[in-house]
Image (cartoon, rainbow, N blue to C red):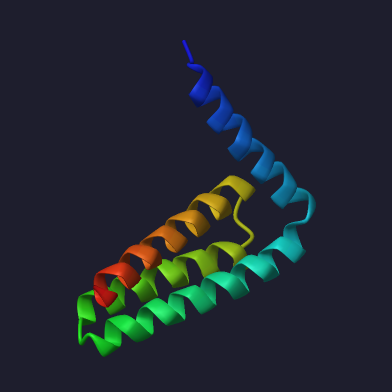
Length: 98
């Protein structure tokens, strides 16, 4: 039995996937640009902190997101990988700043 929060979360993500599918190429261009910039900022700070492991993780998740968009993966895959990349790069950025 699903709780109300699970239903709300699924509905939110399904709406995101439907909106992405309708506007696929415009959304892909915007998301790739924003995510690549965010990944490059995190990579810069990881390199500045001389932490090659974080730099490799940052590059891997950023490339995974870009490759999912370029390969035109299903909408839900693209969104999950995009959100994962944004969160991973945020964590890397916070780890290297503080």
